[in-house]
Length: 231
Image (cartoon, rainbow, N blue to C red):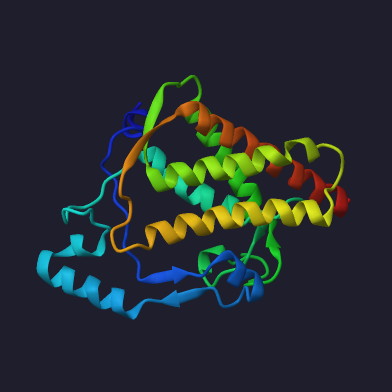
């Protein structure tokens, strides 16, 4: 009941981290060089911390107040980030220098995909489906997150007809990967602005249910393909 209450309650903040992920096209060109350090932003954050305290490390709105969102948005963002790196019939593309995305067994960075992360994503998806079961109406989301959700859900819906008939082709795999990668890139560019999260919108929960269903179908197909290849 506490989680359900927090799903719509805006009491969660975003950290303002002075790193910038490069575009999807740049990550494809060199998946081991995808993160830039923004020294100017780091200095700006330090100056804000000196002026207002620890809140200076958080994302602020146009009025200088801490930007707050609900729990559902905070749960959706890490899911969308990983869906943006899903390689159909494979796993999660290890394309960054972020250590928490390294494959725990192989310590891969930049090359290969993580099936471990894929399986944990499935558990996470089922948790979200159970948490939101029976809920309808609307939920307030940052406009940038809302658009990211819609773009990712649409890209996943496009591949549903391909699933269940064995592995997809290399061309289909690339097209699906590119659409979701570009959607994630557009989100990042929007929130890397000087004043991110310009507005909030009401999004039907049905759109969230659709995203979860499409994502689960793609992940299950990929897990089954991996099992067949291993068997």
